[in-house]
View 1 (spheres, rainbow, N blue to C red):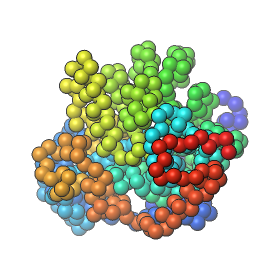
View 2 (cartoon, helix red, strand yellow):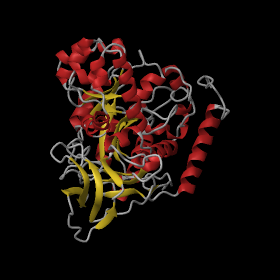
View 3 (cartoon, rainbow, N blue to C red):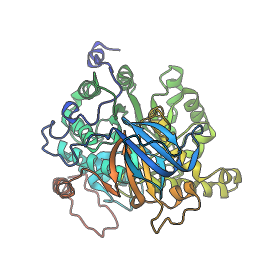
View 4 (cartoon, one colour):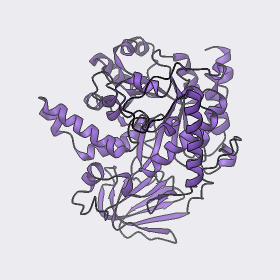
Length: 492
């Protein structure tokens, strides 16, 4: 490794995460000079919370599921799960008509694109997607636009019961852009693996890569107590940049790669032989890979994030997501939304699409595939398997005493759900973001009574509108709310 890279990575992890509530110490929109405080300051986490009388789906075989039980949270950690627990001065949440599940984990989201939601609903391929993002608007993002996009995405995640997201931030044009992305996630109070990456098109400060990762670590993580933030680096596509892998590994950060098709798969054997593929690699999509590639991923311990809607919507390879392939290799894939430029940002729909596509796969002559598809397995993919993909299964992903308290409560009295005859089936096949009553992240209440807390809705919408107007004007885009296609504008 060169001395330049060594100097860039001289900062070591003193702690794996950043204390989310300490915005003044770790950043935040005000600290970065953006003048945007759209969500916060975050209220302190209650000393104790007792969730009383919920139907508990723990995703932990040792804890099991309870028809009616209590969850005691103390100092941000799940202290106990059982029957008639002593409140002991805790803030009590009456969950008698609710289902408690672990917070869901989105293992691959380009959060910076938040203000471009559904701008290209009929995109037929990755070229269409790129035209409405990387090749057009992305080139004109200011740091404040990155902040707004990330904030919109993060708050949307919380609203939908997603408590952890791997933020694939491949529009980090300058240090200020990277800081704005991190600050938005800190201000939103969501558990985040922030994966900084170079832009695909347009002008950007090439001098800050790969040293930007070491700078982010020094600013946000080093010598700070544990909290909700971890870091990663997003690899270039389609060429694998192993120099950046070395930088990430010096810092203990994860390495995320958009991994699609046989062209990338042919590079795996040499990488595996050199010992460069490890369990800190996270590969997105993984469609169109031969069996030999899957064998290498399994042997190397590479983590896999699958994208049921994205692969089908954009016709990536054959359009069939890689969940089944991963399972056959004994790999626990996480589920991800990928982006919101064509469809919604919730994991409920991701679970359903994965379920039905796999059933279709089974109906084509493989009944064992269809028979093994069930709601419990999909909820596992959206929670504990997602946490494992993110490298956070020891902290989150299940309702387990000792883990950090990422909990979602789903109302069962709502008309679209009541009556509940099967708890897991209700969550996977019927629940929507409107049924998410309460979201707790790291012991802090972020949604209560169906409302995301601490958000100035008027100020947020004003910021979104200003950012969107800037991007549209800069790219020369004339919005049409009824357009069937997104016309190429990347030549502007």
